[in-house]
Image 1 (cartoon, rainbow, N blue to C red):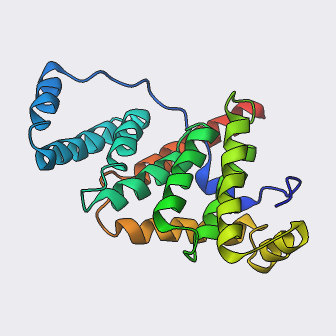
Image 2: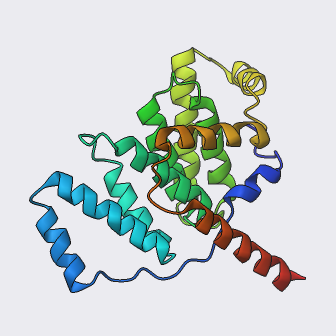
Length: 219
């Protein structure tokens, strides 16, 4: 995928938002967390409630931290929901590029390289690695990981050589964010269904307000 490709309007939906500083848990919350360790189901329930609480307070980094942890609990049947919500918040918030790519890498590994959405996921990871927090110290790691995602897919589909790769990219419109971003976002919707643990419209609104302030400050 060419690094010279322009970023189109689809990225307006996954821009940066200024976030509040993470708030420490109350003593009661700490006790609940410690007690929950005795029962995985209760721990999961309390973590879900914590995500809802942090999101309501616009503390998206803390909500994301819990989702990142839950997305590795493969014995729980809701792990796929946690992973999809983790990716969604990464894309919509001000999470650094490497964190976004890491979440998408986890999503690709979960769905596997043979999944029909694998290509769009890798393309979005590449775009985020390139455009999100370009001055971040882990940008090179993000770029390398997004390339590894493409390598995994190419290996599965037996795509060999630069020419064949570019032909595959063009044939699947993976050089057009307006095509592949909606595919990935729809995949996340399907994985979660109607059971979102936070108000997506809230984060969307905060993002739009932050962007409006940026534009006003620059004018």
